[in-house]
Image (cartoon, rainbow, N blue to C red; front, side):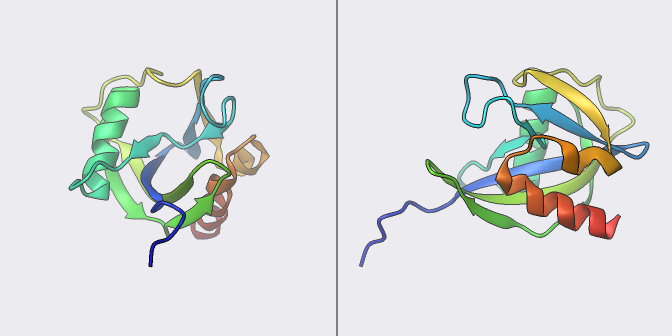
Length: 136
């Protein structure tokens, strides 16, 4: 018996903390969910652990290195065009990390944790913020 829908896309994301703020990245206008603010991260490659994918994606997208503090609960969300299995991690920049640069995003912003819920976010990120704020 085959399913008509493909397996969810495994995606990791980082809640990078600094001084009561979390780094948010704005999706480019031409991409899926363009203009929305999201946690940086990306697809997990075949055979790659979520943690390794997170480090690779943050290096590629932002040019930074992080320490993983703790995972948050994964969430699966179905958009019209794709279903994502989102694995979030609370992180912080390593002292040796380079300066952050928006290599793939339209903009970056350090957002106070109290203002996270006010951003225009992808639906898949909302349960992550709710859990993060309940555990902060």
